[in-house]
Length: 156
Image 1 (spheres, helix red, strand yellow):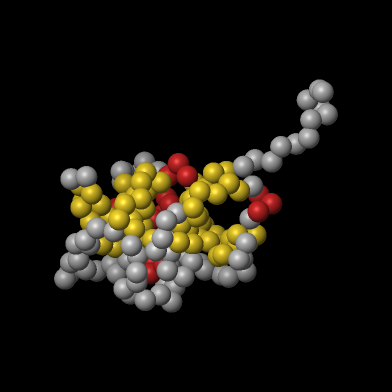
Image 2 (tube, rainbow, N blue to C red):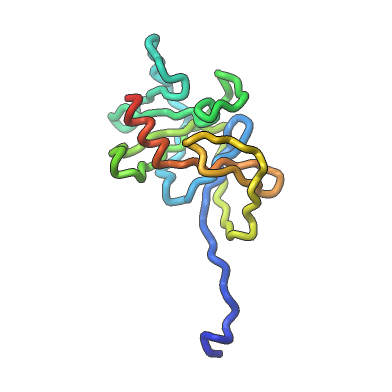
């Protein structure tokens, strides 16, 4: 069979579907370093950013980003996140090695192609959200990681 006769193969992406409080987060599998039990958050009485806290991880102070609060979603300020997803920074300009996002359960490894992604009509003009998609009956955020990492750098 020549190359011209081969059917076009769909491009598949390995992703992690991470449960948040009311939504899901969809990230490429390669950005997740590890998932750990939620550690004690170092709260500050002079906290100026309600979406950002800190935790000790591997002898480092690690930013913990509450993405749903950052996106101004209607969420409880204290919710039952029992794990932290450790994310490896991708923005060289922000120079953030790692940060964490709290989640309410274990992330699922899924494989997607373009036909599985359905854009939602929910409009969120946040600079931290690339888009929202529907996967089955779940709404998932695809965050704008470059902007998120710059915001962490500027807030620290």
